Image (cartoon, rainbow, N blue to C red; front, side, top):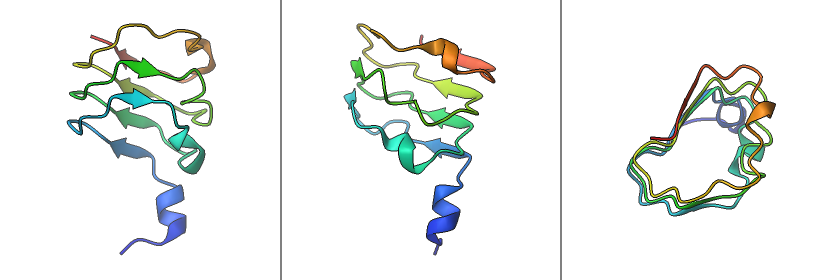
Length: 88
């Protein structure tokens, strides 16, 4: 098993292919050390502007192969270390 400390210090999370439709809950509040987030191959059509507020060291964000219609008010400039952002 994993301790809570190990979970809270994860640097990578993979939620690909999970039929996620909305990102309106700030799950990153529990995973502030994330550097890589894989959310590809879901059905995401809505992303709240606050979802990624707590991941200051994010390097890779993959949102490819979703149903993204609009990403309003999502401030991508807060990602100071971003190396790859895939919205295709």
